[in-house]
Image (tube, rainbow, N blue to C red; front, side, top):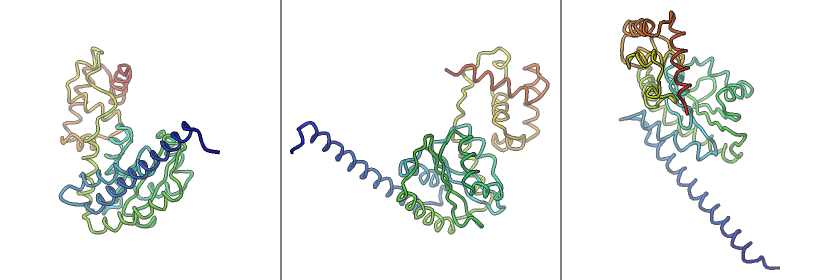
Length: 267
């Protein structure tokens, strides 16, 4: 029995779409391969960005991150795609110890960590070995969708190739830290200062607003100073001035007021 014209057309259309999808993924895989081969100077940050951006599409994920380990044993978030901006800003400025990162090797711990960030599924792959990693690649999805087994085999190939490349690069603390800070500065927070209307908050100077915004994100005084290219003393001076303007007595209260004002103005 021959399929009717409509059924045949639908089948043909689906086949064409599957072929196109396979063609797109092949192109993404080639782009990723080329990005890994080009990883390194003169701009390590941009070359890491070129590596992380194809990963979600290639693996049916929503987000991907790359962390690199520096010579002091800390892992820095140096590249991210599909992640909330505020989370990127916080985590890029705050490296984690290898011991903390190693706990994510446990599937249950990784699942809880991912769910706290709004991702029901996540997959962590080490660059190097779990005992002595050069870094890690994390894939995550906002649904239960996850890569197929053959895709995860491809991930092993990619992390192996990426590891080989990283072994040839400068991973001094200053270089890795510089990439992390550039990532933090490259994303905009979800909240927009231009939307604030409260009289007290509107009276803050732009730098005071920026300092309190970073404190609300969970950064320390030294981290705010490094992020904004100012001294810790200058940070404290801005905080004191902001407290007087807002009429509150602690940095935490000021940061909460600023965050509440921002949230109130979101559409």
